[in-house]
Length: 201
Ligand SMILES: Cc1cc2nc3c(=O)[nH]c(=O)nc-3n(C[C@H](O)[C@H](O)[C@H](O)COP(=O)(O)O)c2cc1C
Image (cartoon, rainbow, N blue to C red; front, side, top):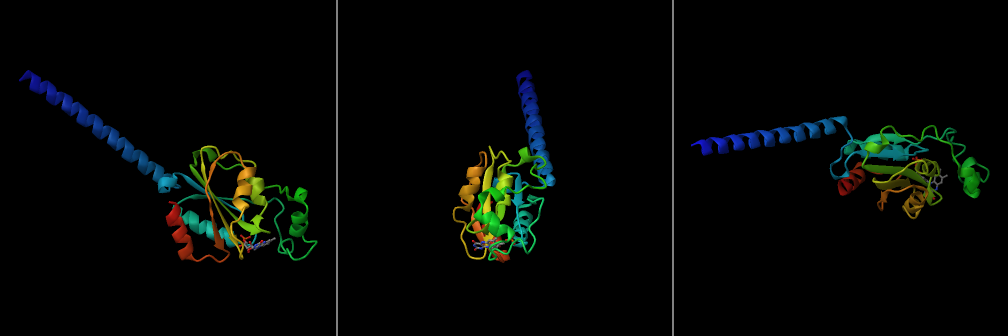
């Protein structure tokens, strides 16, 4: 009889412990989701993007919305005007920077991302300029430590593929598990974006 009481007491304590731990886990999960940016297997996700003419921005913000991710915009201190971006004009700003790599050291408004360490995955979006990532993107990745993070590049372009652009960014960055990435057309459709987001999450 006494033995039965002891066994029941032990079982009761175990049940209470299991329930308590379970409740803590559920509360923690709910709190994490409420903070935003937790995207299934990607974990806490940040979408970083550079966009000179808005196309990449539109794609990046749609991706972030679908992933419930936070967003960081790369902004050059000296923004590119429409005139600066006329790549067919030999003496335009981009054309001069393209011809002389030393001119590509673009200073950014901000390189420090708030709570950088909390992100498990960083998506990096950029336009293609002459087959590579628009160089303000390099200026950003050079300042970050991606160690322990998954990095997923994406670009927009008129016709070029992702090509070597992500590999070159990776070379400029410290650490990170860099994934292959994806190229979107400048005017990517919602369907294309949704399909891709499904494939990575
Ligand atoms: C300086 C410059 C160079 C470009 N070079 C290429 C290129 O090599 N291949 C390509 O397909 N598109 C090229 N484009 C087109 C852009 O990649 C495309 O319009 C992109 O979606 C722009 O993104 P954004 O609006 O976010 O800046 C170039 C555009 C500019 C301004």
